Image 1 (spheres, rainbow, N blue to C red):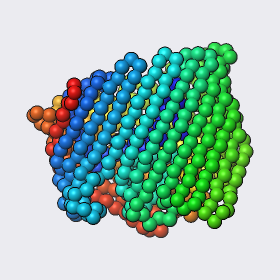
Image 2: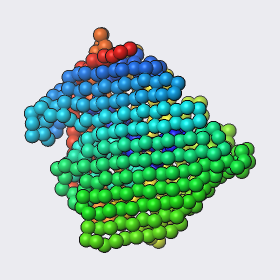
Image 3: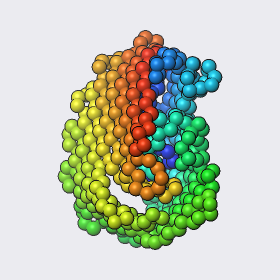
Image 4: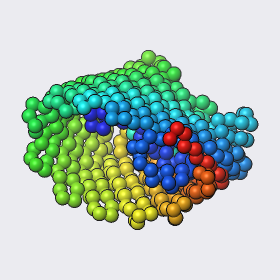
Length: 456
């Protein structure tokens, strides 16, 4: 779930969720940026403020929106700082008790400082949104599709330190914290929770062809309903270069899982965890083979995958197909991703994934995720884009309902004189669970934004 800065300084808590959310926000709350700014050097220092005024029709209600978006980027040879803030103010929102209220705020701060052989990174984040829009933010990791009319606020923090990145002996230390708070919900499974986790890994390179590691991870989740979850794993692994084209990664660990329910009932399991990964390089892309076996309180799960990547001149294609084994059942799992630059001005990308997941309560499910997006630059000053997303959770253990949710978004932006931009678009969300409960949302908007370059 986390990857250290030694290999691209890590996925912090909620980073995948934020990436999905940024893509989906093009439909829900676009903060258009002129094309000239999009073509600027991404490493150049920048402080940009976006203000605007939009009028939207949401489920038949006229709503006024004043988007405020601030982004800051500064970097030197040894240090980098990134900060982003989104605070859309809303007028006449039918979901709010006040006439003037703050919509779905988001903020993220990332600070990295590194030298030639070591680096430290810290990240802080906050976001709040309606649960019916969670499809735009959530990833396929360990969350189920939920139909509820409430809201969720997520606060997270991460600290990672690595050393010896250019040496035969190195290591990584990581700490993370995640707080989820729900309001206005009716689902009894949606309880406020706090998760604290840490990891330690030491790397040793006895020969240029072998990189061994010793690892330990621990996670603690406390929920307001009285459920406490404990996860511990420690073991060893190694990455080996079998020949010039083939690499093998092996990891063997001991896993312990313990969950205490509100009524005092305890679920506990422990056992070995095994993962194997084999990659063979080819001229146009790699072949891959992977196997994983992990214990769980509802039974052991085993995954097997075979994959292939293709990197050609005009498109990239990657895919995996395999099977997951759980409680005597075999279910297909797969992952396909496609990206193509149709022309200098157009790009299309799509992905389809089905994977087995386990939430913090130990419930198992098969998540299916489909997403696609298309963007075309109509001229030097105008851009149009479209995106679709589909998610489905098929619950295998636990009392959650099977549910599915789909969204479609369309957005348009056009640069105007003096750093102004015209923005327009529409979005539709459709959700349903196995009980027949539905949750739908529709929105059409039109507005004008203005960008300010602060402290250039």
